[in-house]
Length: 439
Image (cartoon, rainbow, N blue to C red; front, top):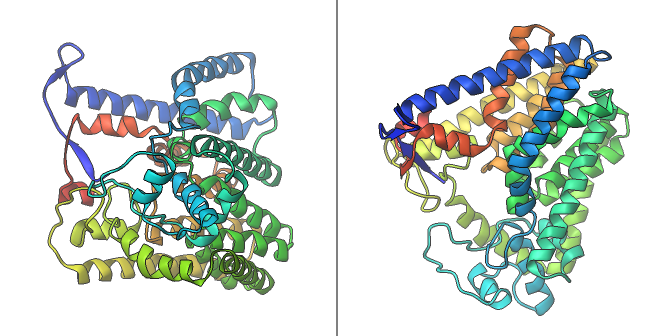
């Protein structure tokens, strides 16, 4: 949503103004970041002796507080009411359409009326118009197609959480991040505070599946199993298009068997979707769906480079009111292409030059970050994929307190609940201005 809140001096919390409360909140968040950095340094310097009785008790209390605060909300997001549309409705309704003989990429207003029994206003700014995901993504709903919409969403969320937990387990096995079962006292509260995870379950999105596939590709590549790694990566590129950018990373590292396997896997999945859904569904996706999705490019939730440049010079017709600096589509395209080429060039250069295991790990992490930035859209739940480069940075970063503090403070805006960001912005919605977009 491209809506920010106006600053206000309306008194809150007694004699404190909203501005003063925000300053206090920023100080508290910074202090919390400093505390996390201190504990991170301690955990890295003494991994075997970190869990003292006092630390165990403190983290257990912290975990309990977070579970009581965020746990009910997290559980509530797992299964939406029948009249609340989340992103997974797109996959579920497309499968229902296919089973009933209707177009896979039919207008969503028709699907809502047919399967949920109520109408939505197609003129609403945030109305779901059409399934925005590729044909291979529609296949993910097949195992739960026999369930009604709320229970299908619940089943998909539970399956996604299993896949996400599996990805974390693989990360831990490969990088040896945790050496004690008491690490769960850290993992549970940090997971509940991780806003991209809440967005993932609320929308029942595809990113825990993508995380599992990308971590699988990375782990297989580390072990020299290039065919398996390519199969994982190719599947991810079929489900969502932007992971295909990582094929270029492995090409720069001259992992030709992995590249070939990825291309074969992607082609195989699209061969399956052609057989299942037919050529017309693919034509409709490319010719009708992609241009309509492009109109959401300036939505405030799109944190990609295309979103940033579009908010400055070429906002679309969807996503809420944005006031650009000026209407200059050519400048938006030039800025986006120039910045994307610069980032992609740096990522390719580091991948080409990487020779040591550490250099290869960090260059892959940089490529994942670049992939998200130069993707046409990057919503908050996409940031789940940053868990892979974050784990790599944790494994290889210096034990300097200053370095660890810097890393933690950079991760906090990604990690903390968006409600805190909205609170720090104020309390009254207003159109996003050029200053908001620049910041």
